Image 1 (cartoon, helix red, strand yellow):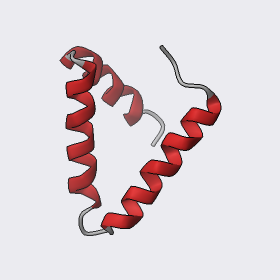
Image 2: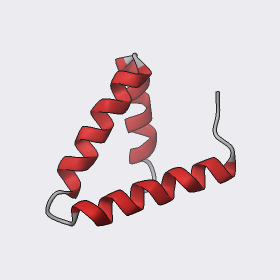
Image 3: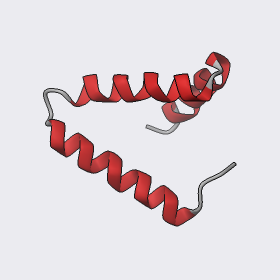
Image 4: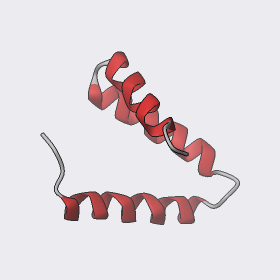
Length: 59
């Protein structure tokens, strides 16, 4: 299952708004909690690791 471009834009907007809401001092904690929740939803640690590796590229 994949997201459409409009769905990805919605996800991006939701994430950006949440980061703004929590503020700079809690953004890192928020992102870690979100990552753990999404890892749980994926249900596969290896798939999560692959996503981390992909996200690290070209930063």
